[in-house]
Length: 329
Image (tube, rainbow, N blue to C red; front, side, top):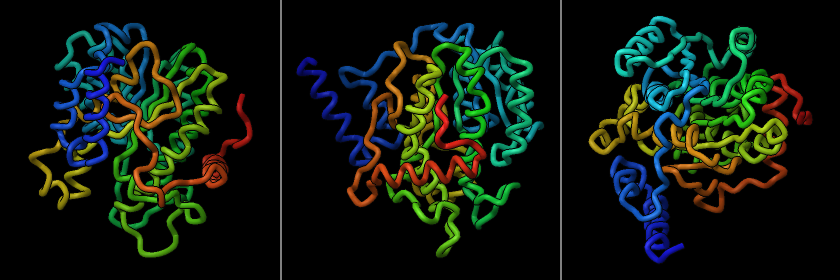
């Protein structure tokens, strides 16, 4: 590493640890100018490949779909609302002439609907190269999924686990598939919720529930990386920084009012997701990424989880998602 690249890495780390330096739009803009910034994927890097994005009708999901479609991928939009999905698909086709954009419907929080969708997808498609778990919710009160699980846990953790496991044969068929979980910088504020995964204790806050389940995603990354490695599947986590999306505006209006002028646009927020999906060689799995660099799972010592805690949460999540926590092949 040259001296210039070392200085670039130090500056990048400083931006990351100060949060306000790295999470707004100027964080990405500054990093792009630093020595050693990872190169963009080559034009056509995803030609002939298929990418499935959940929560793809707006915000980061739609921006991710646009990014992979521009690189030649067949972009599969998975949405809950078919009307909004059709609108998003039409906008993408108008924006990217000749793109291959296909629409699917599923409520990711509903495990039975996930099973229905994956069976339909498996019957229609021969393989899946990239699966992006982007769908998210931030409820203002505690609600539950069709199976009775807390809604953020069902949407951010249980549904994605069930979907990935059900699509493993198609991911395996791709030869070197990638699974990407969209986390959040807010997860740094929370400990792993061992003993209360369903958020039944205490006063419920949607923002806390959201951050807790994003913490669970990150804690499971090394476990999932090991579980899926034999299938040639790499799993990555990423967080977008502070991005201006409909979900943020609707669910966190106070935060949006205070930070609106400095938020990243959806394409900037989706930059690392698209990069992880398309860059070669494939980045190492089992890590959390932000602005094309691996980031620590913890910023303060009191959020650190032991291996035993991670394994306990994994076992509980797997059972709730209806999969065998011990099975690896």
